[in-house]
Structures are given as C-alpha cells and as structure tokens.
Image (cartoon, rainbow, N blue to C red):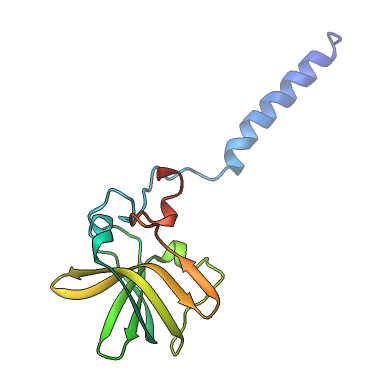
Length: 151
C-alpha cells in the first residue's frame, strides 16, 4: 500500500462506518414468546395423562387475545356429536405460517388435552388431522413445536 492510497482507504472506511447504522433496523430488545413459551402457565396446563381424540366439524376459526402479553392465539370451535368445544391450537404468529389451513366447515380429528380455562372446558391440541394432512402442534409430553431449540 502506498502512502497516497492510505488516506483514501481511511476516508472510505470512515464513510462506510458512518453510513451503516443509518441503514440498519433498530433493535427493539428481547420480545419473548408472548406467553407461549414452554415454562409459561398456559403450557403447564397441558396434561399428557388427559389426552383424548375428538372428531367433528369446525364451526369457526378465531384469533383471540392472549391472557398475558401481546401475542394472539388461534382457536377452533369444534362441533362434535355431543358438544361444541373450543380447541386451542397455538400462537397466531406460528399457526398462520403453516401450509395446511383449517377453515369453517372442515371435518377434523383433534388429539389433545382437555383442560379448564376460566371455568370453561377446552382442548389444547397436540395434533389436528384434516384429510391426509396432519398438523403436529405438540409432542407426546405436550411441548409445543414452536418451542424449537428449547425442547
């Protein structure tokens, strides 16, 4: 490197260093899972000893606000032969990105844990089968698939 090219190289480096922060997105800090993490109260409600399988028709698909935090959940209202029961699938940020869509009028089979939330019976789904498609939402211990590396 010659002595004449050093100031040009230094000036270029400084210009790039000053320009990069202006183009980078500002980090907003740790956001967490919106209450959907494996250690949360909602996830601890899933009881592998109370797993059952129900079939029926989807009456509605709803986005519901979470009990705590900013993240919404996706729930189905499932009409079986004897009842209409809410089925909790998972966080909207995960469910909305899946390829298989569950819609009103679909016939589905749900495998999950029956729980009581705010005094009302519901099912926290581990699997939802629609025809040949299978949505695997939790493993046999109830750990959600969206927990990823935390398993």
